[in-house]
Length: 148
Image 1: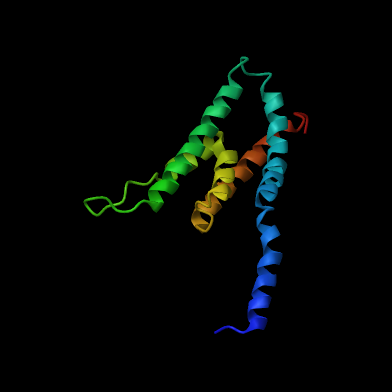
Image 2 (image 1 turned 30 degrees about the horizontal axis):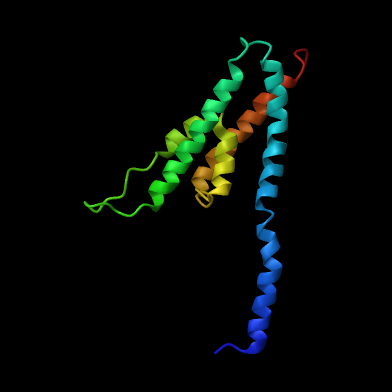
């Protein structure tokens, strides 16, 4: 049987740790906001080269697809085996990375943190952050003056 001091310590620890859980959405918003500043500036510049009404629907659809695929993969990963003893087929990582590369990386990053999907898989994280870095480098390159 645990001692009273141990129980009191555990209650204090949980009470102190509880507010830290509430900051996860705030940290995610700050991270996404800071990562999206440079690409957003580049998109404003790219918008002048594209016909009106193309960019926003494209980005919304790609990010919506990324959100849907991550959610489907998460639910299939948690699914119990069916009648034949097999789990439903998962979404291949190559498909997830393709959607990220096409511009769906913001929702992939957000969904990953919010539903806790593929946060521990290092190989997935490396590719995702490489795609994000590629987008940031491309955005910076697009924003630089052409005379450099």
